[in-house]
Length: 201
Image 1 (cartoon, rainbow, N blue to C red):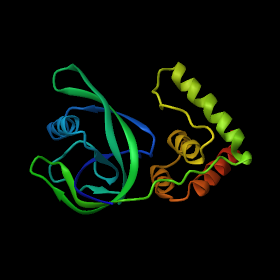
Image 2 (cartoon, rainbow, N blue to C red):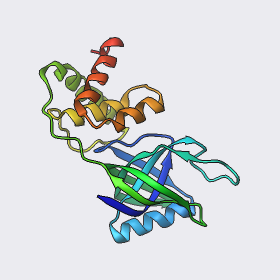
Image 3 (tube, rainbow, N blue to C red):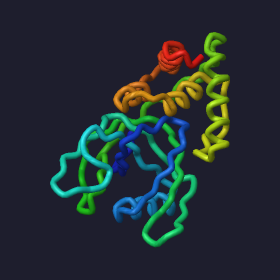
Image 4 (cartoon, one colour):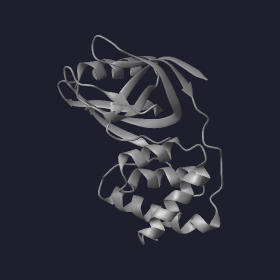
């Protein structure tokens, strides 16, 4: 599937399919984008920055990773003028082509190729300790009011691997590469190895 004129939201983080992303938005270009997404019920693309900052700065060189994740707004609310708090849900991965920067600083992909979803893959018995440890970690975060991950799917390989990838203390580049992997089994194997190497299981 090809997406045309996909607006991009660059961040110094990696969104995973099925992940929830909380945003605090104050720049005019992104306030306008969120308004359009709400009215038109359309997604935008979240891409990881590998050069430059999230806030626009004159003359700054900005570079993004070539693969991102589509995001849809779940909620948006404002408790002070000019600032929007939004919660988004990660969807399909995409690879962008032909970037254009608009006059207001918003980056748009002239076209983007939507990549296949992770295939449904039941969690192998060897990874059940990782799934149980994940449930404990998520329960602890919920008690600390540090966000909600939505419905839990502890028997699905991609869901378990993706949620761990969001939590693990790994470099941003490594997180990006894990997100790009098309095989959820390979992603889960790397996560499990990391957990065991760090004696977290």
